[in-house]
Image (cartoon, rainbow, N blue to C red; front, side, top):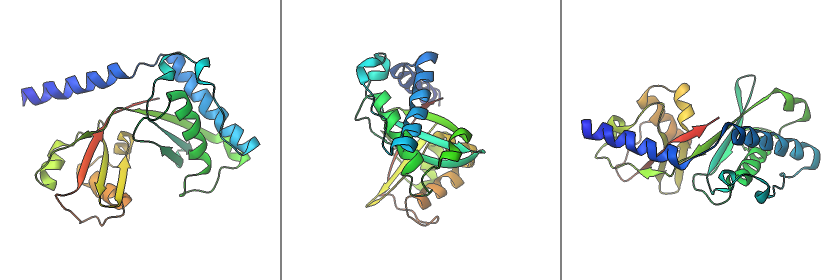
Length: 202
């Protein structure tokens, strides 16, 4: 157990050391997210960001999710699980998509803009979880730390670590993830692929 705990701590330290964002960089990301949403309302397209205008940390290739809330209710959430472009560009793209392209919600309207709360989650690299059974998987899941990805054939779903706030029970968390992936709550197959990741959110 001690060795396992050490490994968990070291893994978290590796993640945090790989994501270096100053308070100023975080403010810039939030500003760009809002500007991209406003650009979408005014121009109907994502804000084009000149990567070289920003700090070297914001030019890192990192994956993000942008989550929008209005009156504390989810209003959109879009992101990527794998890094494929600079962080600052990723934020602009996913802020726009969360506002206008989340299929669960209608496109954002002008009168909603001032009511939005914006949260950005920068993702660490997903790591596979090795398990022998559903119960064994549940034993390994770390509430309030792990984001999970479930993959089974064409079915796929993910929950950010922030979802633990709504689903603090491990079993409920996993069952709702199954449903998000298009699978029944009571379904289980050891051939499923489960990965986990941590996030740096602000």
